[in-house]
Image 1 (cartoon, rainbow over the protein chains, first blue to last red):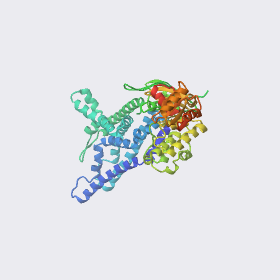
Image 2 (image 1 turned 180 degrees about the vertical axis):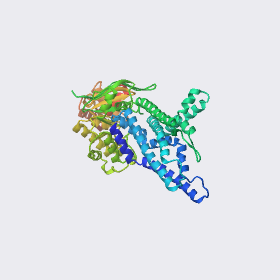
Image 3 (image 1 turned 135 degrees about the horizontal axis):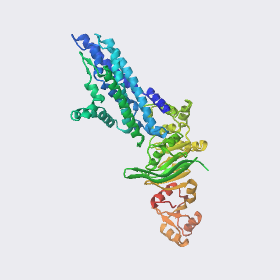
Image 4 (image 1 turned 90 degrees about the vertical axis):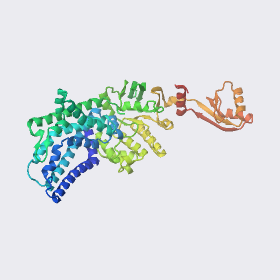
Length: 258
Length: 308
């Protein structure tokens, strides 16, 4: 498996996909900060030309990390079915379990690197271009990212599991959205009637990231800022990693590669 | 006794209600070149996919180098190289990087191996081209190069000459023969081009609708297949009467062009020519042939089982 992981790292490093995606995402964050900067320069009394506003965008929508996991993995996974490289790996003696595990690790690492670069550019460009009226420090914001990292990894593992089993990317994305977004929303709504489902819905990342976080120009209340909230984020993330990994491993292990 | 490289016993594969392979028993010994023959849907690719672990059998078992449980099979698959259906590679990586990727994956030390393989399969000049931009023939060569990395003891090849130009076919044939002779690599190969298989295979397996109809070695094929004589004359009707009169019970067939195919002729070709000449019948063509793989296969298909 180690050799397979090494070869995957070689492929990711020598391919353009990760660089292009990281570049585009970083570019978008810079573009946003440049626009805020220009408005701040040329529009009188523009209220959003601050670091606080720029960085609040991520803090208030940490679900972006989950979507980021989907995006990076889709790029890095590289159409293994279509290219015939999945069947090659199996033919050359790499078990489905090893393939799946190695993909999870490599895609998680690639996502982490991508996120680190994008966040550096995002925070850096905000500090370079925008006003700093004080307030929430970078460390506090990074703690929020760290608290949600396990769930982001779980999103990556879910993507890998689905990509191992579903050839069509559109269908894979629909299934991914159903698990990450559809089930939590439905559980949340039905939870008003069924108590146990309500309790379960509160542990689903899409729900707690949306409804237990309140970040705007005057308020910064995040779930992960309390010890209980932080524990909830970490535990939910770890549960996600375990559930998606085990489900992916078990199902893929017995699956024919058509 | 030579080692059994592949052993399939009662191998069966079902897709829902469709049975793609039924109780197939195949043994391939070390050093064999096993030609797998059959129409589309006969089960050739299904069989090769089970060898490579892409699909699991619904029944029976397959052994590679004597290993049976799936874990052991997986270990032994590292001793093989394969192209099944189409060559697999990363289209956005260059040819050289694709090979380097698989060199790392297979844990082969030394980058020199990539150069050696590139030259061996005739892709050295194209090494910087992206895999996706190659012609079909070049893709097949790349697939073969990937399969050959790691000095496999067994090559599993599904239609490897698909898309190759005539010189590519000759090169591929020579390369496979060279690998078999010099490195004693066992090869199992499926192809629709029977004349090509005939030139390299040492044993044939005939599949039809999931059944293994017959297995025969190249030597047995030569021994079993009948010699026949094709003769075209100016007066076919008269000649037919003469044939029956002269050699009672003679077995012959009139072909669409009105020529005669005489099976297992008891006399030499001259005797048939002389018979025509004695009755002033002109001989337009006279050929002595041996029924080979193509005819054997057609016979097999027609009759359901072999009888040359």
